[in-house]
Image 1: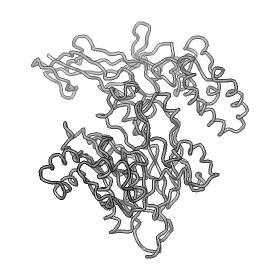
Image 2: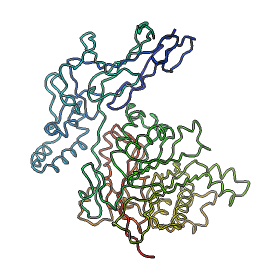
Image 3: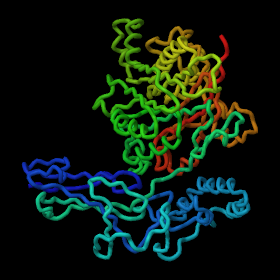
Image 4: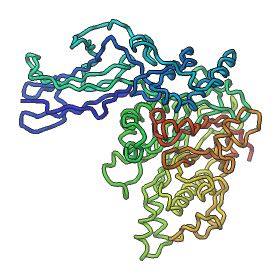
Length: 600
């Protein structure tokens, strides 16, 4: 007959909003072992599996540390405890925890004071006395505390199902999977699986059970703000939900989300396993992406299965149409469903789809080797050039305009390129060749239409490198050191490394904008030698800029930029990814306005 061999959870740390899916191994009547579900609607030889989830409650209530959510809080910041918006961030598990987090934590105070000018004196008093004064030991037993992010917890549960050794078990779920809610914060969950008779509904044998760790709240980083860079009043651009309101402007987001197959515990051992798990990162990434409310979203490292099963359907609920291009798999091995690619989404109420172009650099490599590589070197050339990278180019028609009526009578088209250039740093020639190939394709589109262009993505190349120089200068100095790496002579003559698109990197607007706009703190997060962000990728081993949003400066102007993150704030969790930010990259977002057409 049917029996349960064992059950376990991939992660024993449950997070609010993150689905828990137990692994259940059963022995079927034919003696084979399987993980297939056996629901009551499809019993096996008269037996099925019954599941229950319980919240284990007692009179003891626990408050969670805001920095280390798997730890119990013992200290509370006095300043934050008096401000409802900051209470969730006020709890710490030890004096060292609070001291280590102080550089980041004090920015919460500064923001609160800026928003409430009458509290500035109090903030000054707190800050001048040092971080130690801010922490007060939580007095008495934890039973007097309320749960962070959850308000006071009722002393008596609303429905008691059973009591077990002084603990009350509240049934919270009857399915195999369960998604913890805010009501579960601070409590242990119990999963129970038992074989039941399909006819009598009686249990057969003893239940198999698992106890989780205490449920923790999903970390909530401080929202990143949209910063105006052209002198406009930002309040004139945002509605009550933070949505761009200006009729003639639109926002574009570019974000490498770090695919699950790339998020290995070996590479990111500093990230807690629960925060590195895909169920958690998926939820956190979706919340972040949807929260930006961008009109166009360009994502990189989106696995094929995740695009079709998660991102496309979830973003569809928020009004986005989805387009996707998976990397080719001549080099990549394994199931094609887990190969990643580029995904572009756009709001259906802001744009309509006109055309889609798929760029496969492998095909371009085949053509190049056929044209210029001697027959005896073709295999060597293809081994170097074929890396499965791709680009996705989308032409969209705007459903808005700068003026009620466009005097030219033309449709407002916008071309958006989304790419992920090869990651191998030693292949400088391949990176430059891929970027040049993409630019030549975009030039053909530009020649056929008067169309603004955006080129977004993870270019895996630093500011000042040959690919970056080609993008923003339209050419590469023949003496550039990157050109020394060209074993196949594919970059010669160097005079061919040109293009005519007037591309500018959007984030340089933080540096190029007029002074006096309150941009000083944002300029401190820029490299003034390159006019690019100090970093868009921050791991324990590497920090630097690889991600960009380029635009054609003769047709578009930058209105606002999403603020950059501060390295000190990220280093409190060592690096990215972290419990707060679920990729090793940061998202970039720019608001653009189409410039009025000139007569030609």
